[in-house]
Image (cartoon, rainbow, N blue to C red):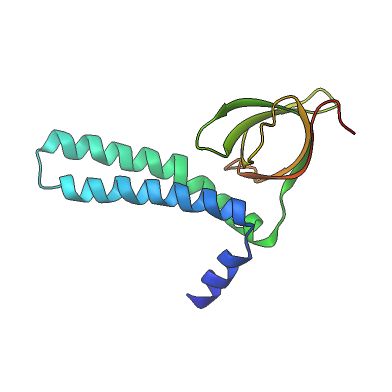
Length: 142
Protein backbone atom coordinates (compact mmCIF):
# COMPACT_ATOMS: atom_id res chain seq x y z
CA UNK A 1 0.00 0.00 0.00
CA UNK A 2 2.84 2.37 0.84
CA UNK A 3 4.40 1.77 -2.58
CA UNK A 4 1.13 2.64 -4.33
CA UNK A 5 0.82 5.85 -2.34
CA UNK A 6 4.42 6.82 -3.18
CA UNK A 7 3.74 6.18 -6.87
CA UNK A 8 0.59 8.29 -6.79
CA UNK A 9 2.52 11.14 -5.18
CA UNK A 10 5.04 10.96 -8.06
CA UNK A 11 2.28 11.87 -10.50
CA UNK A 12 1.94 15.38 -11.80
CA UNK A 13 -0.38 17.39 -9.55
CA UNK A 14 -2.78 18.29 -12.39
CA UNK A 15 -3.10 14.64 -13.43
CA UNK A 16 -3.75 13.65 -9.80
CA UNK A 17 -6.64 16.15 -9.68
CA UNK A 18 -8.29 14.48 -12.67
CA UNK A 19 -7.76 10.99 -11.25
CA UNK A 20 -9.23 12.08 -7.92
CA UNK A 21 -12.24 13.67 -9.57
CA UNK A 22 -12.98 10.61 -11.71
CA UNK A 23 -12.64 8.20 -8.80
CA UNK A 24 -14.85 10.34 -6.54
CA UNK A 25 -17.58 10.38 -9.21
CA UNK A 26 -17.34 6.60 -9.67
CA UNK A 27 -17.38 5.87 -5.92
CA UNK A 28 -20.40 8.16 -5.47
CA UNK A 29 -22.29 6.28 -8.19
CA UNK A 30 -21.27 2.95 -6.65
CA UNK A 31 -22.36 3.97 -3.13
CA UNK A 32 -25.68 5.24 -4.47
CA UNK A 33 -26.14 1.86 -6.20
CA UNK A 34 -25.42 -0.04 -2.98
CA UNK A 35 -27.91 2.11 -1.07
CA UNK A 36 -30.56 1.49 -3.72
CA UNK A 37 -30.20 -2.32 -3.53
CA UNK A 38 -33.07 -2.42 -1.04
CA UNK A 39 -35.40 -0.55 -3.43
CA UNK A 40 -37.44 -2.07 -6.23
CA UNK A 41 -35.90 -4.25 -8.93
CA UNK A 42 -36.16 -1.73 -11.82
CA UNK A 43 -34.11 0.86 -9.95
CA UNK A 44 -31.45 -1.74 -9.12
CA UNK A 45 -31.18 -2.74 -12.79
CA UNK A 46 -30.92 0.91 -13.87
CA UNK A 47 -28.30 1.70 -11.23
CA UNK A 48 -26.34 -1.44 -12.14
CA UNK A 49 -26.28 -0.20 -15.71
CA UNK A 50 -24.95 3.21 -14.57
CA UNK A 51 -22.26 1.56 -12.44
CA UNK A 52 -21.12 -0.52 -15.43
CA UNK A 53 -21.13 2.47 -17.80
CA UNK A 54 -19.27 4.69 -15.33
CA UNK A 55 -16.69 1.95 -14.80
CA UNK A 56 -15.97 1.71 -18.53
CA UNK A 57 -16.00 5.49 -19.08
CA UNK A 58 -14.20 6.63 -15.92
CA UNK A 59 -12.22 3.90 -14.18
CA UNK A 60 -10.99 1.73 -17.05
CA UNK A 61 -9.26 4.60 -18.95
CA UNK A 62 -7.64 5.71 -15.69
CA UNK A 63 -6.32 2.19 -15.09
CA UNK A 64 -4.96 1.99 -18.65
CA UNK A 65 -3.05 5.28 -18.24
CA UNK A 66 -1.87 4.71 -14.66
CA UNK A 67 1.61 3.39 -15.51
CA UNK A 68 2.18 6.26 -17.98
CA UNK A 69 1.06 8.80 -15.39
CA UNK A 70 3.45 7.44 -12.77
CA UNK A 71 6.44 7.14 -15.11
CA UNK A 72 5.77 10.52 -16.79
CA UNK A 73 5.56 9.02 -20.30
CA UNK A 74 3.05 11.44 -21.76
CA UNK A 75 2.16 12.06 -25.38
CA UNK A 76 3.29 15.55 -26.44
CA UNK A 77 1.47 17.87 -28.83
CA UNK A 78 2.18 21.43 -29.96
CA UNK A 79 -0.18 23.72 -31.77
CA UNK A 80 -2.96 26.25 -31.58
CA UNK A 81 -5.57 25.53 -28.94
CA UNK A 82 -9.27 26.00 -29.37
CA UNK A 83 -11.17 26.00 -26.12
CA UNK A 84 -14.27 23.79 -26.49
CA UNK A 85 -15.66 24.63 -23.08
CA UNK A 86 -14.66 25.56 -19.59
CA UNK A 87 -16.23 23.52 -16.80
CA UNK A 88 -14.97 24.47 -13.37
CA UNK A 89 -13.04 27.72 -12.87
CA UNK A 90 -9.78 26.38 -14.32
CA UNK A 91 -10.75 23.07 -15.96
CA UNK A 92 -10.67 23.48 -19.73
CA UNK A 93 -11.34 21.08 -22.59
CA UNK A 94 -9.26 21.81 -25.69
CA UNK A 95 -8.86 20.82 -29.30
CA UNK A 96 -5.28 21.26 -30.53
CA UNK A 97 -4.49 21.99 -34.17
CA UNK A 98 -0.90 21.06 -35.03
CA UNK A 99 1.26 22.60 -37.75
CA UNK A 100 0.91 19.32 -39.72
CA UNK A 101 -2.86 19.85 -39.88
CA UNK A 102 -3.79 17.18 -37.31
CA UNK A 103 -6.53 17.82 -34.79
CA UNK A 104 -6.25 16.28 -31.33
CA UNK A 105 -9.64 16.44 -29.60
CA UNK A 106 -10.89 16.78 -26.04
CA UNK A 107 -7.73 17.22 -23.99
CA UNK A 108 -8.59 18.13 -20.39
CA UNK A 109 -6.24 20.59 -18.69
CA UNK A 110 -6.17 22.80 -15.63
CA UNK A 111 -5.22 26.36 -16.61
CA UNK A 112 -6.16 29.70 -15.05
CA UNK A 113 -6.02 31.83 -18.19
CA UNK A 114 -8.08 31.57 -21.34
CA UNK A 115 -6.20 29.40 -23.84
CA UNK A 116 -8.33 29.75 -26.97
CA UNK A 117 -6.34 30.77 -30.09
CA UNK A 118 -3.05 30.50 -28.22
CA UNK A 119 0.03 28.44 -29.03
CA UNK A 120 0.47 25.66 -26.46
CA UNK A 121 2.64 22.66 -25.76
CA UNK A 122 0.66 20.03 -23.91
CA UNK A 123 1.61 16.65 -22.50
CA UNK A 124 -1.35 14.30 -22.12
CA UNK A 125 -2.33 10.72 -21.40
CA UNK A 126 -3.80 8.85 -24.39
CA UNK A 127 -6.81 7.07 -22.85
CA UNK A 128 -8.12 9.62 -20.37
CA UNK A 129 -6.97 12.70 -22.33
CA UNK A 130 -5.80 14.27 -19.05
CA UNK A 131 -3.10 16.80 -19.82
CA UNK A 132 -0.86 19.50 -18.49
CA UNK A 133 0.17 22.72 -20.17
CA UNK A 134 3.96 22.83 -20.55
CA UNK A 135 4.22 26.04 -22.60
CA UNK A 136 1.67 28.70 -23.27
CA UNK A 137 1.97 31.76 -25.50
CA UNK A 138 -0.86 34.12 -26.32
CA UNK A 139 -1.51 34.76 -29.97
CA UNK A 140 0.47 37.74 -31.22
CA UNK A 141 3.11 37.49 -28.47
CA UNK A 142 6.51 35.90 -28.98
